[in-house]
Image (cartoon, rainbow, N blue to C red; front, side, top):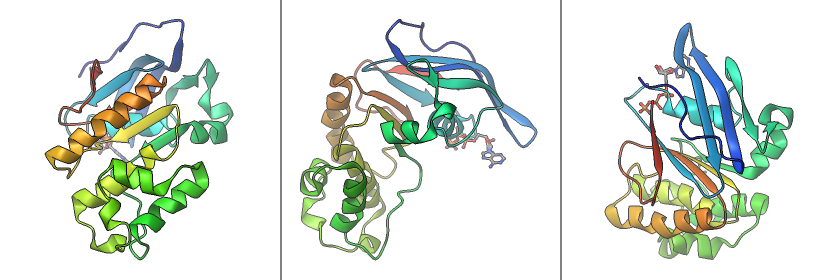
Length: 209
Ligand SMILES: Nc1ncnc2c1ncn2[C@@H]1O[C@H](COP(=O)(O)OP(=O)(O)OP(=O)(O)O)[C@@H](O)[C@H]1O
């Protein structure tokens, strides 16, 4: 396992993690981990099952407190204002977090009510427009993942934290992520993604846990 600095510490870094350590049970999942991500950057978290990729994403999302160290957004500890951090991020976990009885469009409308954005355009971006009126319970696993990913196309947020975003996706659906990710980064957004396969991301740094 390699621990250490992922990127240098550029002056315009927005997301910084310093000396992060995480214990799960009695076991150290990682320690001494530094991350510094400037605007428009992408970081791929790779490594074996259990290496700590999801754990690191949860720490960066503010959902898990590190045993040591801190995560900073523009120099401020995210723990100081969890609501502000939640507001600036889109976190996609392994779970698709869909309501099976609601239609595809209704599921997305729930998030549009929170963040703004237009449901039809977001469904179009992931190729689900034709299924808008189907109940989510009948979707295939890849379609469920696409519906979860449609949240990214609703309204801008500076930080995307994606846990294996392409699980279950066919090749065309993976390719549809390319313009979404590129537009997010072109606007200055940061993406951190845990993945076991290459993602359609230009110039992404890789950090192997
Ligand atoms: N709630 C928990 N209590 C104790 N240990 C946990 C808990 N959650 C995760 N772990 C342990 O932390 C380690 C890291 O898990 P994590 O899910 O971050 O790995 P990962 O790199 O995302 O793996 P995968 O590639 O399988 O998704 C694993 O050894 C796991 O068993």
